[in-house]
Image (cartoon, rainbow, N blue to C red; front, top):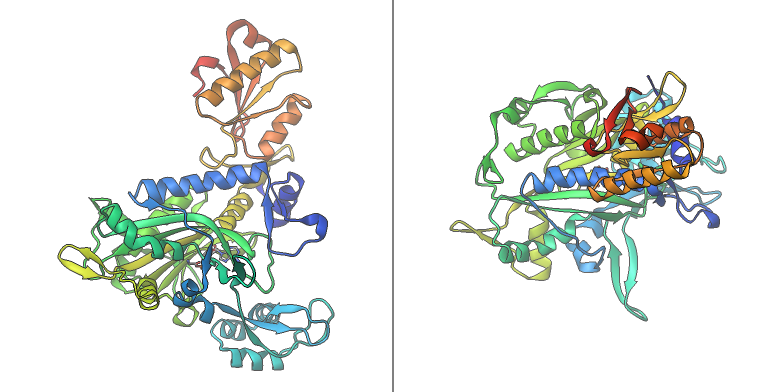
Length: 491
Ligand code: GAP
């Protein structure tokens, strides 16, 4: 089977209504997308696997906090002050450009690796002078671009009638977890270390949303905030010791000073001080296993250490996950050592004590955060799973964890008796908690093609023999092999 490129992926996504721009009839505004039925099923299954691995298996808790919060929350978190990107507005037509991105594009076309690297670490003044000497033009009207200003990415709203209270849509799900932590700790009698997770929407007023699901204005995150006592070495997760196998695991790692990924053991990263603690190692290990479980091949992803200049305002150390989407590696998650930055600042501004008691100590716990972008992970999975087979058909090779349906069920023909039996099989599977793609339209070959294209692993066909002996044909999408099985034996 041949792996398909990103264009074919975007084509399939559009053709099958997997994901589409929102509010299209009014003209696209950019950065907002709707998931159709198949896309939503795949997205939900990725999320379910995240929940199994990072919430249930690790013995963590999951919450759902509000999307809108008052100004003080983001004043304390630092987002109102520092969560911004450099903006260049075209002097002729007024079109907005993200300065660092247009410069990166410019230097990458010129193959100027030194300047390309410099853009990542530059201040606003440096970007201004780089843009002045570079020959970068407006993508809409062609005018030469100049001038840079700081643009805050927070999406504001008004809460309540008339003038209302100043509110903001959250730019990360994490803040709600920090605000609820003290109460959860008390009410649930928690002990450190403990993780609190949240999966939900986040909003950023991106200057130039692009690359489909890579840079959106409304997107989904799956975040885990793991609270711990920085003076205690974390040797246990969920009451069980972290096994030595974790530290023996190797990951593909790009160091802050390098550009190539090298396979390196987690124990070595700890020893070199590349990662701050054992919890970090455990989460990198678990992230790798999570990706393999979703069906990613090991050579499609790597981990990148973020340089000090590129760290988010709250972080003392970051290791991002990058997954190959098309020809490029794209950031899909960030593992960050947030220290007590958030709890400390919320305590200061709200004047509510957020310290907790752990053993015989009162402390502000430190936090390691694993923040995964669900839409980017979804796109990475679909783009790494699309193949064209020997028949020239496009097939999504998804495994049983991410396939949108557990089974396809097809009556061989539109014959009342076959349809009745097929509906009986479909309902039996639904009763057993399985999901089913049921279709009677088109030839059986066409229906196989359709279910292969959306990544259904197993297709069950009800034929005339079924009516005699209660057996069906089960076709495996990946091998296209067919076997006969009793209906009562289908899992
Ligand atoms: N709480 C930490 C945090 O939000 P981040 O690196 O800004 O960290 C985490 O975001 C992940 O969220 C990213 O790795 C990415 O997968 C996803 N993400 C961030 N901005 C995004 C955007 N504009 N569109 C789509 N996904 C985005």
